[in-house]
Every structure is written in structure tokens, then in C-alpha cells.
Amino acid sequence: MSEIKIAGSGGERYVPYGERNGNESIVYFTRDLSPEGLRKLYRRVNGQICGKIAVKLHTGEQYGPNIIPSTWIKELMATDLPDATIVETNTFYEGDRDTTEKHRATLKVNGWDFCPVDITDEHGTADLPVKGGKWFDHMSVGKTLPDYDSLVVLTHFKGHTMGGFGGSNKNIGIGCADGKIGKRMIHARNSEDPELAWSVDMEELMERMAESTKATVDYFGKHICYVNVMRNMSVSCDCEGCLAEQVVTPNVGILASTDILAVDQACIDLVYAMDEKDQAALRERIESRHGHRQLSYMEELGMGNRKYLLLDTDHEDARIQPRDAVKDVVPFVELPIVAERRRKALEAMEAAAAAQE
Image 1 (tube, rainbow, N blue to C red):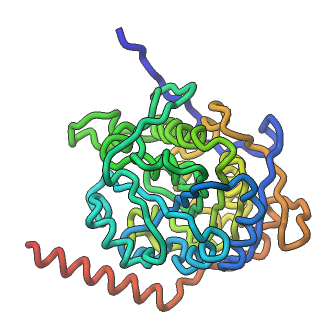
Image 2: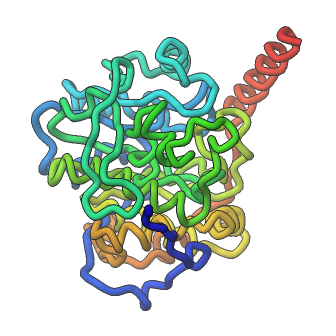
């Protein structure tokens, strides 16, 4: 008789700092949303990055308006990671990246053609062990992911339709799982029944995602670091491309750490430290999807600390509180060029759909 597995609870509840236990990790912060700010933060956490280096980021659906600008990554890799390779996997859902051929075309459209890009599941899969997992004893990842010695995780922090929010945990847990087996293990309990393709949600989804992440984090050990960019934070994931809901949350800055839990928790804390009107959209998305279970389950798995020292690199590493980091944020305004790109992309999608009718 198979063991009955039950997901945890409480994913709808934000846990204030004073209610958290454990040690404090270091999280670096800058308000400088630019290539220079990205390089500055990366250099604070790259001490163990060596050998053959993979850079994991979300390269986005075609013309997606909110991804980290490819020009920022190009500058970072030219100066600090000249021999590194961007790594991605194909998607579970049908779209611009569910096959390698379509994925490579999308990479070119979005400007990711300045360096090698390894679609790690292009030629198969590999299994990484999940130590201490409830749902998995292994996770299926792209075949070539274990070929790398170090992993730099560059994450566009934002909301997510199913996960509540997408931070470093989602970037790895979903983004490193291969498109046809690993992602199915997470989203569909490994069922091939199309009706069950997206049947996992709420706390169980958060737990499966975190266990998938743990497989990759454990594999790289100390040779991994995390940089979260709090910019263009739609409540929608970059998977939705131009169909993502328009951004209403103010831009904040960039955070970096060698502790995945601390950096994702700090981003959440900065959102909750905003004025009510500024935090409302993301907060509703996170709580309605029970996204806080991502954080509490990472803690249960021993993946890091929920407490941290937030160091302001704009002011000589002074320790600050989340409210200090967001006190000067301004309302988000979509750039005209981005709005025009969104309009043209939507028109092109509508025209393509009409042509198929």
C-alpha cells in the first residue's frame, strides 16, 4: 500500500520577521537598476563561482516586455563571465519554447544570441537526487546541466499565475527541470493524462517546486549564487510574454546572496514593506496562490535561512530594513517603446491566430 502524502499548510500567510527562527544570512541590495548595478551585486556573491560556468535565467517568450534586458546580461558576461554559457530548458506548455527549434528562434528574437545558449534537455535528461524529499527521490533535469561546475542564477523577480511569485526558487525548480519529464513530475504528478497536466497547485506545487530546486542546489553545493532583479514586476510570469498583466508594482532594485531562501524571502519582505497601494497586486497574487509555502518548505528542507542582514551597497554596506529599501520607490510607468512593442506583438499574435482559422 503506497504512502499517503499530504502537503503542508499556511502558504497564504506572510510570516513577519519577528516570528522567524534561525541564523541570519547576508543579502546585498542596490537601487541601481542598470548593467552597472547588476555587475556590482554579482561581484559581491561570486567568490565560489569557478570552472565551467552556467548562467540560469528566464529568456522569456517572444517580445516579452518584462524580462531582464538581454543587454544587461551581455555586459555582465562580457566583463565578468566571458566563458560562461546561458542554460535553459524547453517548456512543458505549448508556446514559443516547447521545442528546441522554436526555443532557438525565440532566443534570437529576444536578443540572446551574443553567447552560447545550452538548451540542456535538447538531447535528453539526467537525474539528480532529491535528499530528504517528500514528493521525489530524484528530479529529471536537462542532460547537460551536470556538465557544469558552477551555476549563476539570475532571476527576474515577479508574480506567477500558479506559484504566486517567481524568484530564484522558481527559476531553478521549474527552469532546470527538463521540459517533458521533470516539469511533468512537478505539474502533473508524472501523469501523461492531458486532463491532469496542470492539476498540482497551492501548497503541493510549492513543495514539489522546492524539492526540484534542492536537487540542483545540492548538486552545485557552494558553487552557486543568486541575483534577483526587482524590476517590471507583473503579477504574471515571463512565460506569459506579451499577455502578461500590465505592471503596477514599483521597481525596487537588485538583491544578491549565496542563500537562496534568504534572497527570495528578502524580495517578499520588500514587497510587503511597500505602501498598501503599491504592494496590493503582488500581495494578492502571492497569498491567493499560497506562495509563501515556497519559503516555509525551503526552510524545512534546510535550504537556507529566512532571517538575513540586508546590506545597502549604495551606502557602504549599511544594514537597513526592508522599509528603508522601498521608501523612495515611485509609481511604475511603462516606457512608450515597451508599450509599442507589446501592441505590435499582440497584433502579430492576433493575425497569426486569424490565419489559422
